[in-house]
Image (cartoon, rainbow, N blue to C red; front, top):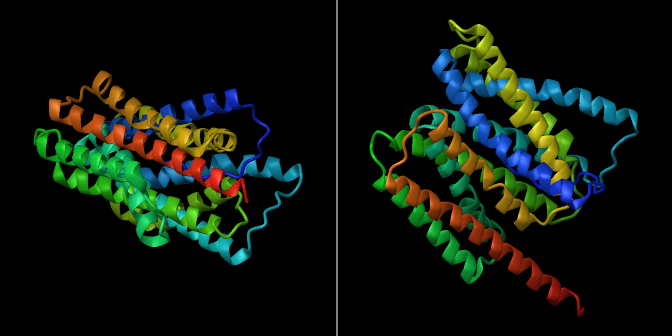
Length: 321
């Protein structure tokens, strides 16, 4: 999942691109690790999401403490808007990752990831048009139409054993949570005064941990497994690599790279997840699933290109003034 960042801009562009590539691939491994957890233990998606939030929070707290020793991070964001950002991000992040893990359990890693990450930008584009009056443009309309076509091919053309409607619905719910966070950030950013992304993410993990605790307790918060060491290692990996480390690298890299470029690089997440699903987890992809996946990812790239053209046009309009 990607967020706008207000991280310091001292990282060179080349290193920023490496950070973003690592973050995209790392995020793609989160679902694979979840699949392995589900196979080795009776831990459910809500409990797994709870442990991811707790682990991510515990790993980010020392980073925030170390940064605080260097001096306070100054932001121009009013307190009320910061509260809205934190609560909205926390609720959206909890919905996004919980529904995603549930989708992985229901319909498999490859399909769940492609639908979630493919539908997310489409929902963002449509939400920005309806809620904030942002124009899609001809390229944006074509990209949205292509994404919807790809989703239809993926769902209707895939084999029933590979593409399960409940899993698709959960993936779309996950995409809605992702889109809500992005739209909220974009809306708050319009009035100026950026927030501190790292502390916002830590607060979001705290909110997710508190909100998911009762659900995880009802689902079974402690895994019962014959391989406890393996499950613990997988949980530590999910919290450390695709959560705390990937978010930190994403924030550092996204501060220096154009948003459209970031969106395209983040396509590595569903691509890496699909490769892992086929190569390591033994999932099968039908011809319709592959075709729908390519349409979805091409549409996301098209939306990114349309965003880049729109930003360039706005700069040309403002420059003479």
